[in-house]
Image 1 (cartoon, one colour):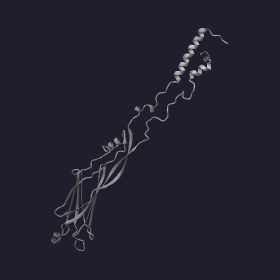
Image 2 (tube, one colour):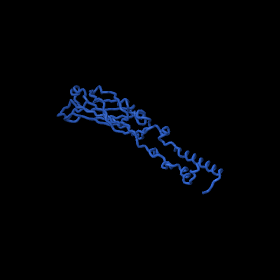
Image 3 (spheres, rainbow, N blue to C red):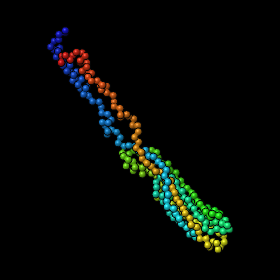
Image 4 (cartoon, rainbow, N blue to C red):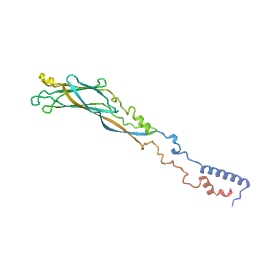
Length: 256
């Protein structure tokens, strides 16, 4: 057995104490905080997908009379946003026809103007023989495509507010004046028949199609980091700090 001098023992004891202190420090070392410990570093905004569906709407049916000297005139508006198209369906029945209901057929004209004439059409149709029925159907289109870009917001209420603004909400046709004019041209050529025929009753149905947006929270956002998997800790599976193990293996622990 090797005999050590007193000074050598002191040196060894001091060295062992230093190693012990170093080992304890390593054992108490904590790895950097995981993302779950740092909520302020994670963006608070969420992504909301916008799911668009086509919906149908309609205005109250206009049932009026168009006279040969007094055309029918009115103004209507569409209340919805994101209007895709508007369809005008005019129908009537000629109540004065002659010669086996094949002559004296009236013609009706539907004239529609919107946004100071930017959208405008006029169409005329003549009553059918025998039945006297007549129809006009015309559709105008608004060339809009709802955006599919997700909405970033802190919560669903904020996302709903953004959904009501551009570019997700198009109000170019919303509550805008649509001027309607229905006139009649009497088909009877005989004077007495013309005097009897004052015009025609008609029905005008206005329907429209629009895009309706619904929100859906995107819970599968790829942030580029996997916060569910904690970082590897090289000492997590060791019960004895490496420096303490070194001390034990070298046999220096018996001098402490």
